Amino acid sequence: MPYVLIQHTVGDLARFKPVFDDDGKRRKMNGSRGGRLFRAVDKPDEFVALFEWADSEGAVKFRDSYEMHEAVEWAGVKGEAKILVLEEVEQVDA
Image (cartoon, rainbow, N blue to C red; front, side, top):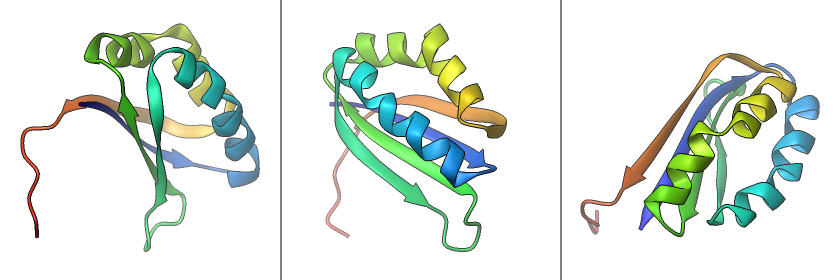
């Protein structure tokens, strides 16, 4: 199962969150099966989103899309977002 991991610094959560939420429709249309949004404990402006994806081709298409990069800009992300398409190698118990 492929995943998309996005790591970014958010300047203003009130600006970021509506853009992130609204982008959910496009993510789903392109193969996202949902995901999770995390915030760093010691750096509250650092966020990581991890999405499960239907296939790696759709995940790469999403990562490289103009709309994805525009959404990052509209959301007020500071600097460059790190976006990785991942494939699971192994599950471990602990």
